[in-house]
Image 1: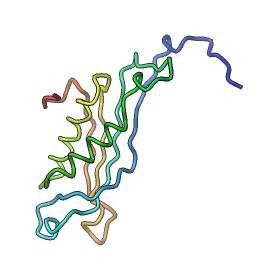
Image 2: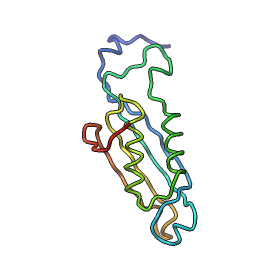
Image 3: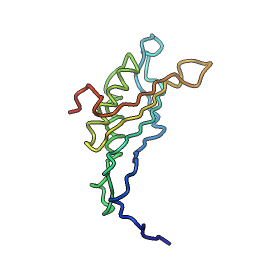
Image 4: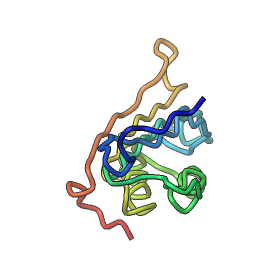
Length: 139
């Protein structure tokens, strides 16, 4: 049984995140000849922190950040070209995240090339950045 909260949702300050966990793609990435031979397995974990005043009150899609659009934009961009460096790829994805919706205030992203070395599961990057710190234009 659902019980109404004693406080209104508008009165509660919550830290809210939308997460895209375990996005597995084949991406053209790397500087070595064997990496340039074709796309390789790549994994991303993307978390978007939303403004504290972000609330869903009417249960309508317009009230939320569109994670379908996030997923589709990331997939399309990563398929669009070859990346020499993971750093470049991650910076592009961060810009996509901030451009997605003005309510996104922080991006936490983990990436991994999962087939580079036989003796480890993956090699990747982890960035956490707030919108006001991000120097790249987000148009």
